[in-house]
Image (cartoon, rainbow over all chains, first blue to last red; front, side, top):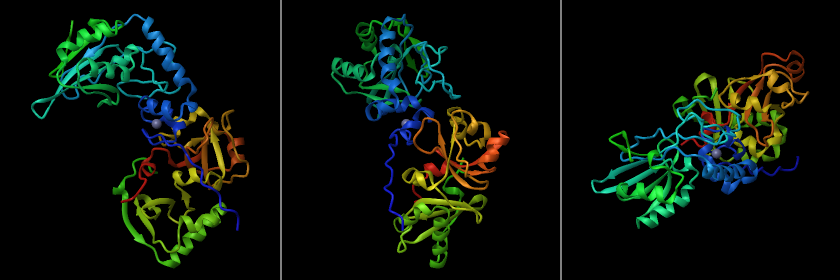
Length: 203
Length: 181
Ligand SMILES: [Zn+2]
């Protein structure tokens, strides 16, 4: 009898479940990226580079808009401009056309949406979407928001599979000023509230 | 085959008789001699072997709720991708080029040019009607399990049409069904 082969240990992505090397072809590469950067950066050497470049680009770029929303899952259509050097491998037909490089198709608009969600009558969460489209690192932003408003803030996956920041409590009135002061690349004209499913300009 | 596969496609799950179990083991070993030393681990004699009958004459061989092999009618047993990933050398391999990956992952059968282009690769010994591992350009792990419609030589010389039927692929219903509970 032949020798017993050792099983190969495959690194499966904990986000999409595929072998990590196939995340780029998976249902949502964008969602896998934070995990990949942590666990398998060598598989996608361009990812780190790209993230850095994007931040640098963003700071310099002329920015268009940030949205702020207040209820359920409205305002899902956050759209943003990605950096123009997008790598084209395979795109997937979805409303948010994200390229496998995690870039967002150009025609999409860059804006921040702020939405207040009321849970159990009194408890309330303010959801901030789209800061990442301005090159703002969400984990950073989340920390800053939590500190500024002395509350809990965390980066979570939103209903449209994009990452958003959930801030405990209703901070929707003070948040616009804070965003524009903290991240000068985000113009007030690009910030919107989502109220009853409608987008309302903050400016 | 497993594109939309769910628990609802399983019509019956039966523990098979020892004689049937023995036959299944033998068929698997005949098809994949490399698995012989592992058979006692994969299909332990003392653990009940379940055959789940599904739509379209599909059978799943299940041990401790984990699907390990499948076949159609009396056709050859094929490993699930999760099992193949652990023991990649048990099957002959064909490789598709990078451009074909997304099509395979949407369940498409494999066209000859995807295997004969510079990114593809063919093991010339592969005959027709044979289970094969579908590898992909630039990737280490198998993308799909296929069943050849043509021999590798024909795939190369004819170079058009479907060369391999895609039986099971990453993220299809069987892939997502890690356990039957
Ligand atoms: Zn993934």
